[in-house]
Image: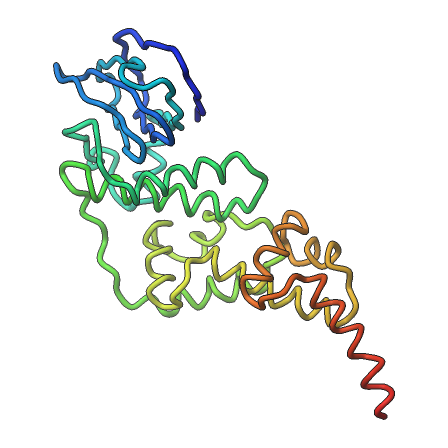
Length: 265
């Protein structure tokens, strides 16, 4: 991964052994590849196949802010396994500049998430989903993904595992071991049956359990650690999204209501 903020720079013609995915956040650049000169404006995605010569310079812009991913062979082989296809079936990209704002925002968010402490399940899910969207939408030929079927039993096992192990830092491989599906097929199947990704479902389980602990008088910081959130701010953010108040506000309301209940008795 790379995060750059250039005000003056020029890349000489070069190649990378890795697949390069670069998303422009601000400003832009002029680049050359395949004998064509083009421009990277904000919210565009640049993709360069391994071994593909290209160059770049500031050009028309006074500033160029972008984030990039460099995916080597080992990563791409692992990704193909997660996607449920052979490494040879992974597509190439016929154009370098992709004007796909939604995908650009997705990769920017993924890059920022990877920089922070957080759930490994969230990071792996977002990376796999973003790469799948890139390859399926813009790759050639389009990967032939396994069709979704009736995976209620497998999804039920995963759901039970998430509920029983919500306090752990769960990885996608932990869930895949419960099924005979690829990890991406598991994510798609879980979304189909539950309406949430495994990570989003795990977050809901943690929030509900934290609410129970707060009702019992557990401090918000202790509740966050007990249910598996990496810090109190993560609990606060998700708790407020669900209940409309912070854990501290909720705990305060519980304390205030307890004496009132006793006085009525």
